[in-house]
Image (cartoon, rainbow, N blue to C red):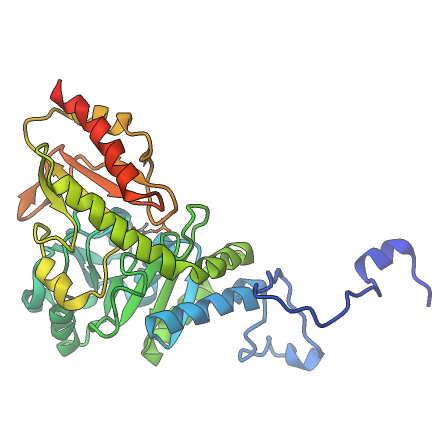
Length: 386
Ligand SMILES: *Cc1c(COP(=O)(O)O)cnc(C)c1O
């Protein structure tokens, strides 16, 4: 039956030749995914078919999930729209009204806000604990504790946590430990080897690697946790774009060389900053001046691209903002892990053991050479002499 051209726009007989092969994972788009027979869907679609509807994943998103699980040594991963979405799905999958959650004082800021502002509305109580609590966490675990967060190192104040000690205490009480493993990128820190039950990453940072996408991942080993996250994912509609996932898959191919450069260049710049008279303290986990440095040496296999500096007390807020504004190669912006160096003043974080006041500045080292970055810092530090 000859069909009209308008119908043929939708149901075409033309097909590209088969047999094309390339290194790139195809970008599979689809809200509707197709079934061969009516029987497959007569009683609701077959739940064992991973491709029921675009929201549950496409080959592009599921390949990225598989690769993150492989990288982190997990059994299963799910990809969500951002690192923050990975944090929020963790709360929604694992907590319920009447519950209690322990969050470290150095946690990613929006994690702490989500816990204290949103989860409290659902009857989940949050308690903040000191970053260096280690096995002392045992005293904070209650009958109703449903989740313990760890983050190592903190992404602003850089404290390294004793995750194995926290995880051992949590395991003894049957409480799952969720690790924000963004700094370790699933490479420099073996989350599962150190006792975490859930490893989450903002893929936005190192896996994406170019400051042009937002994605997050949750990785687990335990089948019951997998079920909890799979359910939450299916209920919540945290669907991701195959375009973002294809960029993340491309990012994975260069992750090793980028991390290698970041480690070396960041150490070089951090060590140079440590020699400067304007600086009281450099917070980089691979330097002894960082809280938890000994734990870093014990547990990490490398260091990444961020560090913070605490300026000496004698500079004013205006002087430090003037220093940041004067930098040329370091651009002012949130996030990290991309190709360009970044700088951000963090005036305000306080910890049980230390008040940072208005003198903490964080740097993210990009793919530039360390010598040029040090020269940029040197010319900007001149403003502090006036
Ligand atoms: C950036 C970041 C997140 C959130 O990631 P987004 O993709 O920006 O939502 C979570 N945790 C840490 C430690 C981060 O640095």
